[in-house]
Image 1 (cartoon, rainbow, N blue to C red):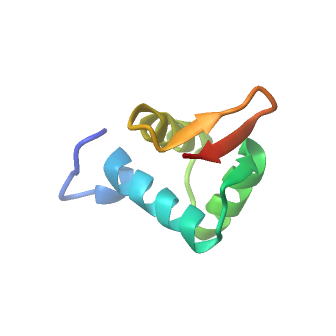
Image 2 (spheres, rainbow, N blue to C red):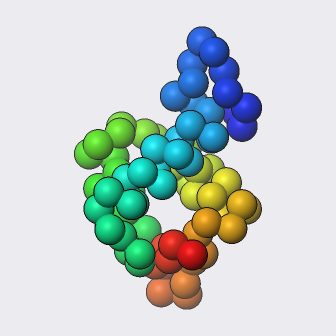
Image 3 (cartoon, rainbow, N blue to C red):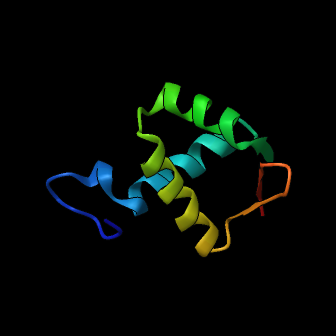
Length: 76
């Protein structure tokens, strides 16, 4: 679900994207391996891996993240 849902905003990709952006900024992360990012983020905000990947897809679509061939996530 991309659009905010008043009954369950925590499943919205807008919300999760914002939480992930805050996590990256608070930890001064410019580049990180995908699995390390998931483990670190999941410790703070429990999230199934498929929902995490949808959130990364959303942030990639809006131009916030890019992926490298080595499996790293880079903040633009």
